[in-house]
Each structure stands twice: as C-alpha cells, then as structure tokens.
Amino acid sequence: MTPLLTRQVIHTPLMTVSRLDMKAGAAVPVHSHHNEQITTVQSGCLRFLLKDGPIVVSAGQVLTLAPHETHGVEVLEDSVAIDLFTPRREDWISGDDAYLRGGKG
Image (tube, rainbow, N blue to C red; front, side, top):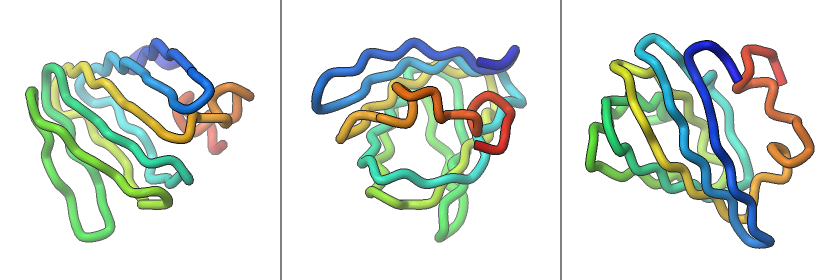
C-alpha cells in the first residue's frame, strides 16, 4: 500500500477482516464509509481523529465506529491493528481505496 502501511485482507459475503501493519508517522486521512467498523489494536498506539475530538487507542484496546462516522488515524508508534467491517468493504474489493494508498480516492 505505502512504505508505512501494509494490509492483509479477507472478504466473506458478509464482512471484511483486515490486519494493518503501520509504522510510526503513517496516517489514514479523514474519511467515512457505510460500514460498521471494529478496530482492535494488537500492538502500538493509534490516535483516531473523531468528530468529538481525538481518542488514543493502545495495545489491547478496542474502538467501534458507527456507519458513516467520520474518522482518520495518526500512527503514534509502530502498530498492528485488526479491523472488522460489516457489510464487507466493496470499495476495497473493487480497488477504490486510493485514500489509503496516498491518493485522494
């Protein structure tokens, strides 16, 4: 994806599960999607940029995001996170994920 962000993904008919390996300094631009999202941080520390203000999520913690909830991520230290989405990420399947690859999307 980028030198600072790599991803492994599994899609089922009903959900998408991804593992993100992120280096300190990486960022996911503010965006939203129609999918509900559950993020569990396996290691490291992430700052989520939410409408009501930033929240830091560290190893062992979980964050849930409602459908259409605007959010972005700043990677504070080398991190691994597991993201679960329902319904599945059709935009990722079709390759419409330029916002993660450094494009505008």
